Amino acid sequence: MSTTNIADQVFEKIKNNQVKIKSKYYILAEKIGLDGLFLISIISSAFLFNVVFYYLKSTHSLDFLALGNYGLLAFLENFPLMLTSIALIFLFLAAYLLRKYDISYKKPYRYLLLLLFVATLLTSIIFSYSHINKPLSQHPTFKPLYRNQIGLGHRRNKGHQHGLVGILDTSSPNQITLLNQPNLIILPPKNFDTSTLHHGDIIRAVGYYIDNHTFQALKIISSPRQ
Image (cartoon, rainbow, N blue to C red; front, side, top):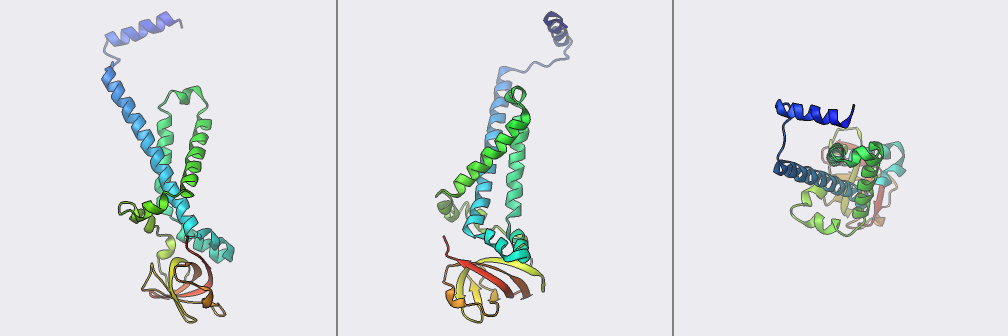
C-alpha cells in the first residue's frame, strides 16, 4: 500500500470523526505525566531495594545461612518480604511504562527490560553501602520504614522453629535480653559462653518459643553493631 493511500485513509477517518486529534497541550501533559510516573517508579523501587539490602547488611541476616536448615528458615522468616514486594511492584510498573516510549520499538524490549532491572538493583546496592541510610534511618519520616522490617518469624508459635534478630541489651549465663524486644527473654543454648557478648551487639538466634515472652535458643551468632 502506497504512502498516498495511507494518507488518504487517515484523512478520510478524520473527516468522518473516526480519529480524535489531541491538542499539543494534552500531548505535552501526557508526556510530562508519563515521564514523572516513570521516574517516580524507578526512584521508589531503587530506594526500597536499597533499604532491603541495607537491612540485610546491617543485621547480618545472611549469617543465618551458616546455621543449616534452621538458619535458612530463620533467614526467610526475617526477610523483609513486604518491602521487597512493594519495590518489585514499582519496578514492574516502570517496566510497563517503558513500553510507552519510542525506544522500546527501536531496541529489543527484553534487553531494555534487563538493563532496567540490572541498573535499578546495582543502584540500590551502591546506595546501601553509602552513608545516606544511617541519617535517613534516624529521620522521623523514614524511621518506621527502616525499623519496622518484620519477617514471618515474628509469629510466635509455641514449639515451632523460629529465627530471631535483635540488638543485645543484657546477657548472663542464664538469659539474654534485647533492646528492640524488651519483654522477651532468650535462654542461651547449653555451653554457650555469654561473656563473649557485648551491649549493642547484633544477635541472630534460631530456636523456639516456650511462651510469648521466652525464647529457647538452639544456636546463636553475634557480631558488633555497625
